[in-house]
Image 1: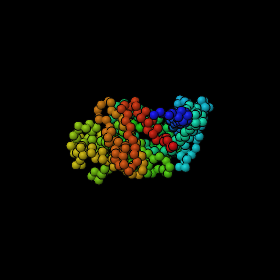
Image 2: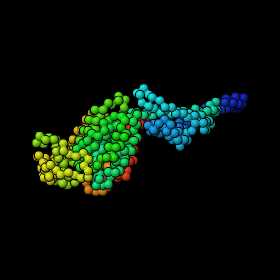
Image 3: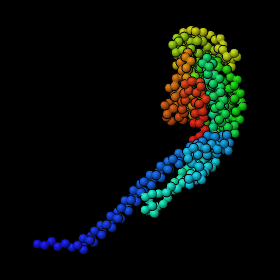
Image 4: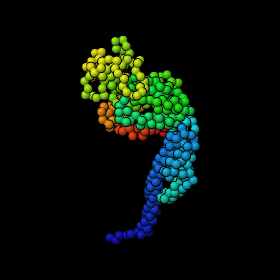
Length: 399
């Protein structure tokens, strides 16, 4: 039996196969090109977006120094990230405006074309990449509460605090923001109400303050809360209380024998006696020289009006938490700043306590505003930490 081979038919089938392979290769190369070129486009998009995000944040951060300064800062940061209008086929623009909430905004947009490689097979020679970012500059209504207890002077930190707090206030605008100041030791003092303008008044107050007395965190937070409650707060403003301390609560205020008094305990946690009490009305705000005045009574006793050292300490802590809860319940954000105590003596601040006050990550109440706790290990780092707080408050990326 002979095997008959139809060579003509085989040739036709080979030709058809080659055509199918050629068509498939075009499709495969196009798919591979699409993946490679789109991958390059994705990487370019990420880099462009990050650069524009950084630029508008820089512009918003400098907004309170004027539009010219804000523009200069934004363009400089964009340039550091390789984004300059007109260079390498790139288009970049910045626009200052006001959004629907009445907030000042800095908008940045950038675009560029990148040549394709494999996608040219499909007739696509260029990929257009673009990005947009908007940073909002909301007005801030802020009550600054400063601990002025004597441990700051003992640890040579008082001058550093005054400088850092003054620099912090200078980052806000007399024309855009409202800032107030209060302070506390055994007694709390309402110094400058939350309003505008504020720069000159607050800077002067901070410069004239002395470091003296104990740490009544409950009273300090109370004055911050009352300042916010009494202020003409704006509907669209960021409403915040910034609270600084270098120690743990050591004082409580109350009616004892029908008199408004403050009972205080030592900063030393191993103490077993009450230090004494003051009549609140006669406490000097800024004693000069800044030394602790004599007690009105209960000098170094085991109990004062039935309260032990441990009871006073626990109540002082609870008073601070109660006042912080009022602040957050009113919708105000609470930031806490703690200063370490490298000089020894009294223990450093209780950071967990300050996180609870701030409701960091919702630790106190997930339904209330969440603030943040910042820690400066030494007074030399106070300026940097206050600057971090200002950065966190003054700018948010809106888009």
